[in-house]
Image (tube, rainbow, N blue to C red; front, side, top):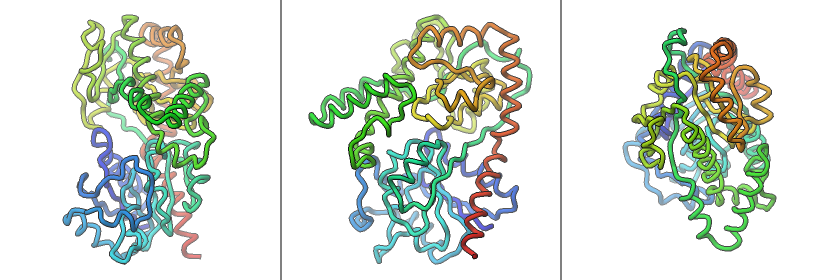
Length: 401
């Protein structure tokens, strides 16, 4: 198979290029010929959270000439598949107002790594041969329901890289958190400044979500057109995500647990000067595995993956660092006995789980072993390549029938 892989966004901590390189390496193991094209980050204007518009309305958005030259080389070419991550490509149009991707003979796979509400603009582009990969099963169903011109959406987990030795005794006895810090109050202020209907809708969504740990953001509102409204109400997701992130770190910091935090803007965290809190500089994504491997425990908070798992969990499993993450029914099913799950609204439960992982050596080492075995079985990049290749190959066969 001949596959063209783009990077049109760098994503957090330059992870876009890393994901592309790992996918290429994995697919090459299955005999695929992969061509890589990276478009400079700001050469294609971003639609942000704007409401989607027809391509013709966006036709006056200027693409830098360097990017245009890179893109032009693929027009009228044939591939078995095109892959990009959180792609900007669906919005691009040609002089005749046709979509750029429709001028390449290949199915296009948009690998969406966060909630599809942030990609309403690109998902609304009615390409002729459009597919989606997503890390969350609920997100796949949401896409299939609200963007029916997309031919299909498939759940594919990301992989992780093993970089550490197996000696857990050399690990730092602390809890690591990796991710960006943003004050939830900032988003609440924006919500409270909105119009009466929008403000009330968003506050109601937040209330429902906080009172039901299994409720997804897409199920927290029953007003149509839902896809447009969720895109408009993205502040709800940002508030909830950062509220629970801060609550987890506050709980651990206030109860004396040794914390190590890596990510942007944590110097603005109001407890960053506590003796048990150590803030380190953020690192690029490929370096994050080394940081993860140093710590005994990796803390995760990802409340909007109700039918999926954040890739940092697999990174901990790969590197003999036990992960503690917020629980839901899906994770309780697939991560039972390989990760420690806490109840997101229960401070005592968070503390009890953290204490057990730091101080019960036998329990910790047993979980390290089980988690690493599960990683080797299901969550390597070779596993990602196998699942991706299966989908790509199936579509290639159908195209030639």
